[in-house]
Length: 465
Image (cartoon, rainbow, N blue to C red; front, side, top):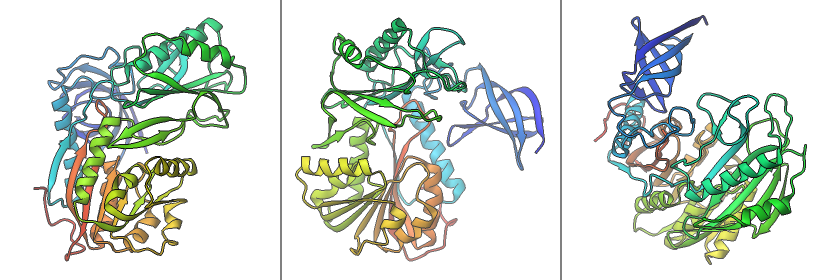
């Protein structure tokens, strides 16, 4: 396809989920990532697609009338957030509009749309942050922070980031200064040389327990005893450091993973409490990044389940078993399936911690494991990763033929795709509610109650009510 090497100034006339902007140049539609409706922006025109030109946002020239909040000093540089300049009510309304528009364009019928639930916290809500070591400018001092917006190699110092817990700023800042003083080299993603890669901090917001995981390559040594001493001597923390880990990662990809992990200090997990249940969290456990938002999310799921006792419930893509355990008191049996073995091990530990006898977890791929289950479910909970349900698994899941499904999605795009299959198989979306789990970002969780209906294969007959 031909490239249009041209930089233009355009006004954003509309937004489209997820985090895309629409403008016009010389009578042609231009679509690009980032931006807010009403902004005047500078855009690089790239590829010509069938119905539009693909662009790249270079600079915001004029703010949108919607931008009334200037509480973050990193807004123009940091790639972590999108809606820092919006008042929270405006952010919620925008997310609601974008998701509804997406479903409308896809022709998905929802009988009862219940709006969007606010996050209990908008600032300091994140219980986990993954910081990267690097530099802001080539040859500059060591920095520990987040990626610069649109730049793979540049890292910015995010001191005072307002979506992370306050203790994270204290820990991040001290770790950065510690390795600056030692003149320890960061891992260079171009040359693949260097030591320091990432620092992951997790905090159980209900208990205050903090877990710290330092990730480096094997190209240098870290004095773990001295490093631990520095952390434990920190002052001003509201929580308490309960766990310290050290991870070696020699992979080329810029992701947090473990070739080797060592337990350094404290205990091997922290404990979070949600809706009266306790959950152990280890360095690589999946757990919702918004603790108090998760309570709201799981309360929505429980409300959608209703008061009726369900004999058998499947919890597919069950992670560390949070939903399964929350539903256990109203079920005869809950069966969870999760492909990550560590998550299943932690889920089983959590069921013991909560003294639940009617929950079973299976470690394996949903696509394969659903063929082995002989029980017939009354209700199936589906909480898949961002890619949604595997195309080969979705019909197997529907073949269980329960009266109801509850689909919890962190990606409305793949949710809309999957819902078409449910509708074609004789189901309808009875209820839908959004939960703002990720304030200041373009992401949102969606909970759908899917029920059997008597009119399959009718996708485009209804509108939102």
